Length: 362
Image 1 (tube, rainbow, N blue to C red):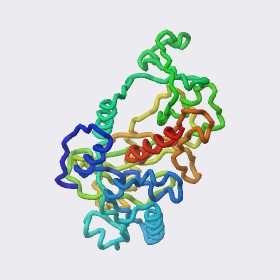
Image 2 (cartoon, rainbow, N blue to C red; image 1 turned 60 degrees about the vertical axis):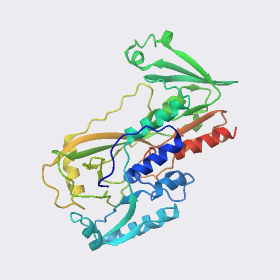
Image 3 (cartoon, helix red, strand yellow; image 1 turned 45 degrees about the vertical axis):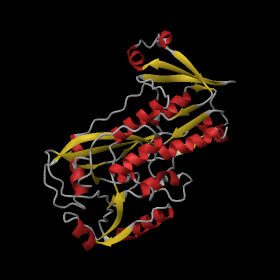
Image 4 (tube, rainbow, N blue to C red; image 1 turned 120 degrees about the vertical axis):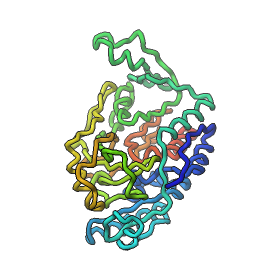
């Protein structure tokens, strides 16, 4: 990763987005690399498009010899999903590459990179606007209804929505957009949106579980002791507390995992808690030291937290992305994207192409 350019760029076509990311060599795929977790899933190819396959690099160090079969299974699943360059290393080989690492074996993927997610989204925005797309920022879809001609979506200024008296509902400030095609990609609120879409059959709305992951970083700026991303053997519901690097080579550790035990009934006014609890640091030290035993005491500080939507709860088999079209729910022109958790960002263009193909077949 050293020596890669960190300059921002403007991209003017979707094709150029990929070429720009390739040119800068900073495509991050492995942070939540689920090619290993979703064997034989119909949407698995979305997670390993050709452009992504050539940029993966990570360790999966086991804590004991009992976990070696898990690594072998991950390698097998990865290759079944089209990821050929996954190599099993003996512990000594891996620790020669990363002297601070402790492991008995490691699964090495030599071609991973990282991505500036904010820069990537700005590039997509520039490309879309150049093609005539209009973005309505600070606007909330508060509901809608199905009509014989398409779908009516009710929109309201988000600021007024939060400030208005509950008795008025700000009806005078709402506008209605009518369209033949609507793609519901509201993330954590995808279920909430479609629940407010009058006429949509509720039996096609899946449960929504929320997983919150917190990250910690070094309390003071410090040179990284690692040059590769490091992942422990994955645990139920997530990847465990792994070591990742940003474009400035800063180390971040995370996420820990909190998974809602029950279906979360969200609505358009749901507020999500993104604070990081300092007290969780002690759990991080123990988890990190299974592969980085020389981690200093009192070196971690809260960094950030993220929340992702899941379609499976604790103890359940991990669920694949759910992309619903008319062939599923029977509503012409509506495509729902449910449970688009990691790696939804890095698979976003592949997902968009998948959705486009569904729409174009109408």
